[in-house]
Length: 172
Image (cartoon, rainbow, N blue to C red):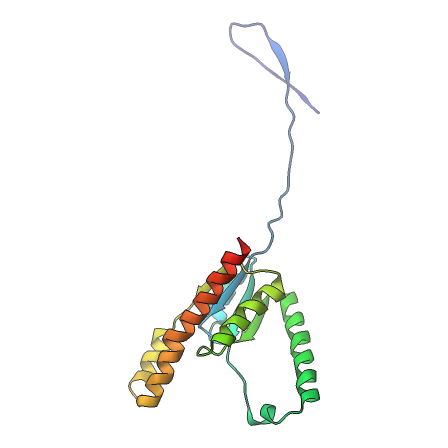
């Protein structure tokens, strides 16, 4: 340690020792869930977030084709194992896409659970509503599409908000 001397006016000069400590703090990465704006449309939004050092989970579209419905149990298990391996590899990059069916409460719970499982927790959430995307579709909607739109635009966000809030309450 280095001794420093300081002059005090009109008093006897005294010697004081000063100790300096340096602590380097490495902040733990926060995990943010970005839902509502699916990939790849959300890429510019998530690019901005990625510069902050956060782990990012982004909602993605459900890919349910006729072929996946006809799979055997063994084939589904193999697909699930491959999916989990793919998500583990994505997680190493700090950004992962998880499928979310906005009109399903089970899918909302699954999205939140996968977020906490992949990165060990969820610290923040952004629910992104793309009004322009829905406004463009609104002109051509029939009654069936209106019902589906309400499920996606209202119920889906309510389900997901409920699951996110429950997750935060359980954590605290």
